[in-house]
Image 1 (cartoon, rainbow, N blue to C red):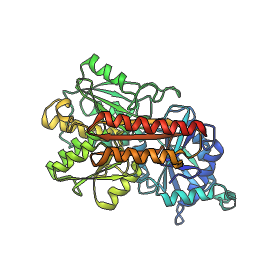
Image 2: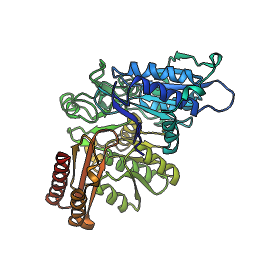
Image 3: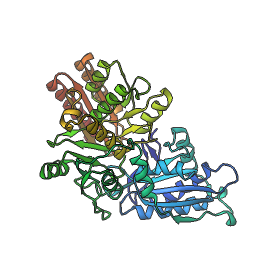
Image 4: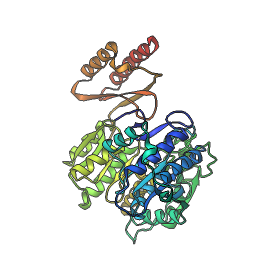
Length: 450
């Protein structure tokens, strides 16, 4: 769903511009608060954020809206998105809120909502909340004696650290491993280095000095060059790059090579399959995952289930079909034995567990398959619907025919940015590049003409 407010991952946009204004945030708080009231108990919300400057504005606006709806708000401060999903269940809250634009630059922000079960909201619930935003919602708000309260909650970092540590066997220690962790100047800047240190690792933490403006800035999972350099500099065994809200992870091996989400899923799926832990006979990923992952799983008689882009859709498919490993090439890894959403730290710990069990370097463990040549290019748009234009449709159809059965073509509008994403893959890299460039060119021409 992509409505006026909600996109593929909650509400997201440039801070202080529609829809990421204080007024919209307050009304979302009102609508969400009213939507999740059940029974006569005191209703509560857990509310976390990342380290963006605009987090203060959005947080206070949402608190106003939630309290106006009669919800008590537990303020968690800067904390990873998966910690909010965990704490909404642990603290028996009725709803969880994460204020974050994930991997986007500091000037964007977003609102992610979780139900009392810790899962992101379905399209249907988001549609219900969205339908309330432009109505006279004030008529349904709490009476003066039923307003909510807001308070800071202490100890939430410790709760999440203990949760993350418990995803490993009690007897497992990370001693002997030198780990560089890049926290993207984001929500994990305290918890990730501390959790790794408590598990026994030698930890070198970088990008752990957020200032409101530097989140994801040339660091983290979307910009791993600094991590690659640091791994080489300190001769680390592994590098771990999280994004701004720590629901994504990218690994860097001891040689500085990047290990993406597809390879991470392959490693974990193989390990869990061998130990009998893998459920459902396969893995869930999106249309963006490499064909090489599908072939690798097929060799083990496992199936790759594909969904549309968005970890929420991956999770929905996992729940519906009884699978416990899923994710995205970008590094959203969902391990439903532990979490209800992507968790970069927990996923990294599973990779570290494989290293300790097999006593082999990351470079040997993580190269599970040779990726099929794949190329992704983005075309920035300012409006309109270029994918509905006849020349673009014709170019896409021609591209599919040229790739044939040995390749794939995926064209989609981004749910979080004003972009059209054009991705092709196939065994012939030159053909893949030609197909992508031709389609990008047509979209650009159509955009310019508009």
